[in-house]
Length: 314
Image 1: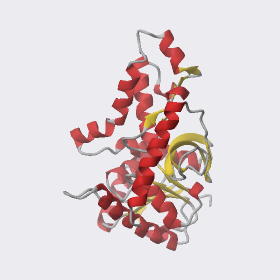
Image 2 (image 1 turned 180 degrees about the vertical axis):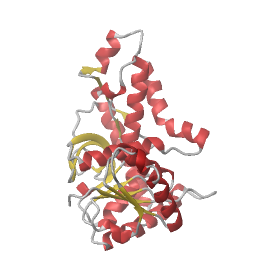
Image 3 (image 1 turned 30 degrees about the vertical axis):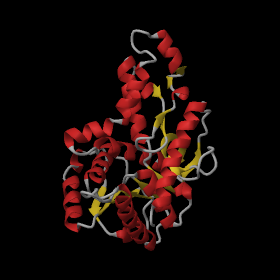
């Protein structure tokens, strides 16, 4: 398949932030919107189409059905439900897992043979559910993982040292959640290790600042939600970045939710790791030389995810 059709399942804040960013960046040829509320999907498509005169390229945007997945190169799932009062996290997970299984069954019934990208939280666990339900190779089922967390980290470091965020090379690994951690041992500014940068720029950043940077990144979503009830612009742009890596066959490296598959000494579950992405999906996971503390953090994150998966009913 060489068409650049993206099907977006779910037209909530995240799905439409992604669609809006796709239009503004001219990233694809065709966007199909699917939602249980068909009228909303139609209205969102109309609204986006009215901005095409200002977009960088011609695009086809419309509401559709799961039949449209057949010829799509990429299906992005942003659909899901929010937690009810008194509902446990496992109850919420089981409800969202049922939704994922229903969505995936309809996607696969169309004879879909492309790549599925999952953005619904908790993304690592639900990507695992989608992989199991789809029957697709793990290389073609991807979660957004810690791509946004990594972008937040790079932004915070760039603020501290006043260097362009695009020259900050550092990763957040593990669960997209409270057990995520910074891989400081493999953090660079340009080609210079962050440790050397700190030693040479004591007026800009100190080692003690790194703990605060980590906390700012880990708590970013909570801080945004407390102010505006949801986060969606950042993840929308992260999804576009992953989309472009696929459609442009980039072999780019991003921290996404992938099946570990024995690369690291942890359970073989979906978790945020650096991986090479191209038109086939995941080419391979990048194995970093983690120090003992980082390896312990990765195992802890993996154990938390595995414990939750073992409690679920799907």
